[in-house]
Image 1: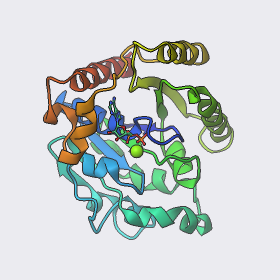
Image 2 (image 1 turned 120 degrees about the horizontal axis):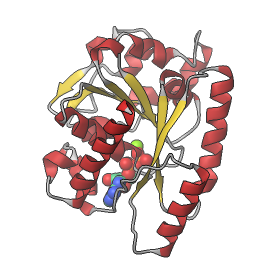
Image 3 (image 1 turned 180 degrees about the vertical axis):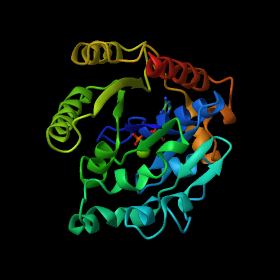
Image 4 (image 1 turned 90 degrees about the horizontal axis):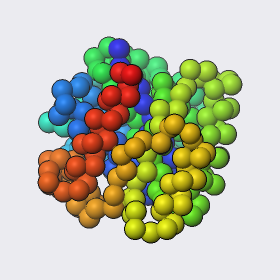
Amino acid sequence: MAKTIAIVNQKGGVGKTTTCVNLAAALTEAGQRVLLCDFDPQANSTSGMGVDKTVSKGVYDALIGEIPVEDAVVHTKYGDVLPSNKALAGAGVELIAMDRREFLLKDALARLKDRYDFLFIDCPPSLELLTLNALCAADSILVPVQGEYYALEGLSDLMNTVRIVRRSLNPQLELDGVLLTMFDGRTNLALQVAEEVKHYFPGKVYATVIPRNVRLSEAPSHGKPITAYDRTSRGAEAYTAFAAEFLKKQSA
Ligand code: ADP
Ligand code: MG
């Protein structure tokens, strides 16, 4: 039975998609059965896994019950992908009128759970209905945090939302961990933010940090995870180490 992990932070550009793609690929390489569900209408993790984002069938069609979810799954060398496409952009409004509107993703993914070890949901940069669906479908959340001044401010809004979701919609939802991304250990600011994040989430911050690495930002335009694009880069090393730490934690 797959463990479902939502990769979430309502701030854009903090490394959610990069983490989702590269963690999925590194775990696939380590022999895990992985599905990446791209739940952002931008579809960056879809294309980052080498899947055409103009696909006709995607997570949206499964969400509204138009197709069986398994029909939308695309197999890749780097792991399976449930693609997103533009149709998801209008979904936030459309879903409001539907029954079980917060549980549509959970219901759609339920049919896939016994086929995988891990199911990752790449969330859009908001705390609205799509993200709420991800939080209701997930067993835990993984929060990428960039070392910058306003990082903590956003995290308290996120954790408030998580508390509300636990109270009413998904009492089992756990915090898997926090991953420091685009980290530059040479700057005082980055070190200071890291300290604050560790203080705010005691025991929850991954020891592996992801450095800023230009190869990580180049890989998506080649439709490849970093391990396939440049295995010897610092980015590839970091995500491989993170995947190992992640895996160890899940079995602990
Ligand atoms: P999000 O999904 O949270 O919006 P992304 O993963 O798309 O964030 O990252 C935002 C941008 O930063 C992208 O262009 C991505 O390629 C780049 N990026 C992400 N992580 C790194 C990193 N560690 N080093 C360099 N560039 C990165
Ligand atoms: Mg993204």
